[in-house]
Picture 1 (cartoon, helix red, strand yellow):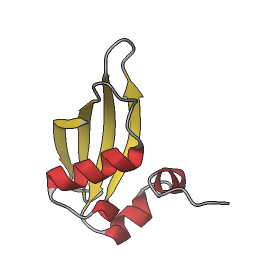
Picture 2 (cartoon, helix red, strand yellow):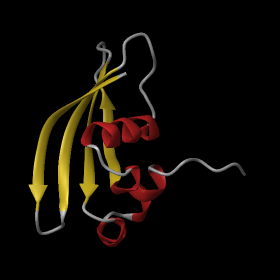
Picture 3 (cartoon, helix red, strand yellow):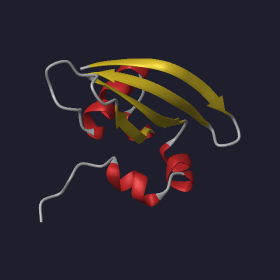
Length: 96
């Protein structure tokens, strides 16, 4: 899996960076949000708890996916702004 940042815009009002990325996943299925989130945190040299993948769409016929993520300045800012369903989608699945 190769993640490439296409666009990185700063939103000062919400204290976050708004990222557009592409994921190349040769010979493998579309990676999970958690895998992409981990890779974005590594590339951006930030804490994984501040990165939230908003959406990710695979391109039919190509082994790439385009997505959008938000990287917040702080975890408290993220919990105030980011919708609860997005926060749940970005957390590891629990058994049960």
